[in-house]
Length: 90
Image (cartoon, rainbow, N blue to C red):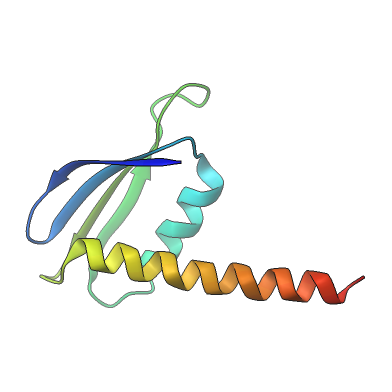
């Protein structure tokens, strides 16, 4: 996975996530919406086979990089809990 920042302003961040699809992007988008500083969070994939997901995140003035980073950390915690629960099923 490679993240490429296309645009960065005080309260707006546009970036691409190369090598990923709807699964990760939808989870990140949903987690971003749980943050009270988010005004807009969405992504688009131009072509389902060769497109690169492009994210747009807008905040109420909070640092968008920190907001995205915090959302990723929350997703990581959820993933770890899911892995632990799956291991207990054996």
